[in-house]
Image (cartoon, rainbow, N blue to C red; front, side, top):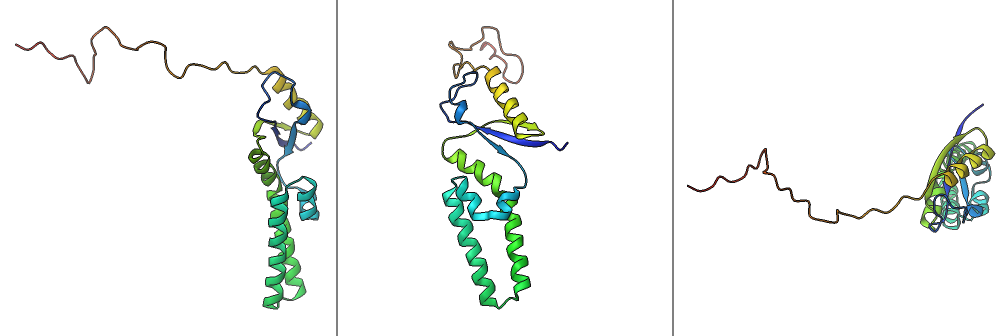
Length: 161
């Protein structure tokens, strides 16, 4: 069976080890998206990627206008459109991850699984098993001065004679 990688996206208020916010978790598969290849703009609208849908629509219309202006034969225009659709299928998951991060849903985990259900079980299990990192002080509480003399590049000054 073919394994695939998935990324888990959660809102910023979600904390490791807590189930709050897991009902809104988004699992994004990595790799080529056949549905984005076949339905381009509709795929972006279905996943609520409004800006990306507008950019893809403008790009496809621009390609069609350019092909018409250059007088390309229909066969070449079809090949150019298919190549654009292949590019969209390759980059659709990355655009979805980028949009989720921009909306405040950063990538929290990445898992490898054979099915989306297995990926969801692994990601949520790892999220619930993890504990929140205890915040540490940015620097030690006291001064870090040593009482012994320095050995090495900066020896202690000899007493003046």
